[in-house]
Amino acid sequence: MSENTSENNAQNIPDSAADALAANTGDNGRLNGNEAVNLAAEAWKDAASQNIPTFKFADEALEPDTANLRQGPSLNDALLGLLPLVGVWQGEGEAHASDGTQYHFGQQLIVAHDGGEYLTYSSRTWKIDSEGKATGHDVRESGFWRISSKDEIELTYTSSNGIVEIFYGEVFNERAWQLQSASTMVTETGPKNLGPGKRMYGLMPNNNLGWVDERLVDDEMRPYMSAELRRVAG
Image 1 (cartoon, rainbow, N blue to C red):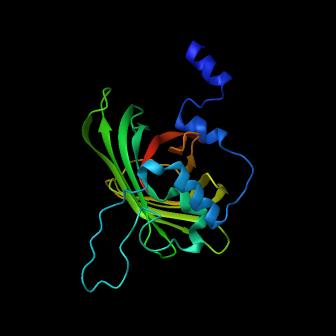
Image 2 (tube, one colour):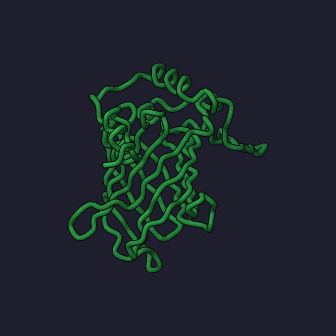
């Protein structure tokens, strides 16, 4: 064990996004709306004035999307359990290709709303080299987060590499959300032998957003993608 690893263990500092999410499993407490907004405002002061670009046509009846809870329409009360996710997040992660090789990627994740009973979800990733420089396009995802009347999270998305997937899950606590795929469909040109997955999203001790995607391979769950993202807007 290295000296740095020993020091991290002694101070209970997670080594990765996956470690942080595994450690972020406290009591299943819930916040009310005001508490959640106040905590978010305090945690991300630097991103408070930033938002996604908006353009509204003259005759458009609905409010444009906002990724900043301080701007635009009020978040629908049904989505308070997902409130901390709203924003623009950027960072880096690691993925496992179908041939078993690993590679690093950069990511921009946008979670926004327009006052309706859903969050819009857009993820864009790009491959990066050992120096952090972009080397080409990777996977994009687009979809929606919802919460049912039974407090069950629903995440639906489609990806640029031919995946359509439905996840169900729950609000683990005010800082973590865990999901499991209920339906995974892959197109003819999509990835081969993609098994069902599990995802966990959670705020790490440094208030970055970590997420982990695991997939069933040979009857066991194995890492597929994971990343740590910092809030840049919202």
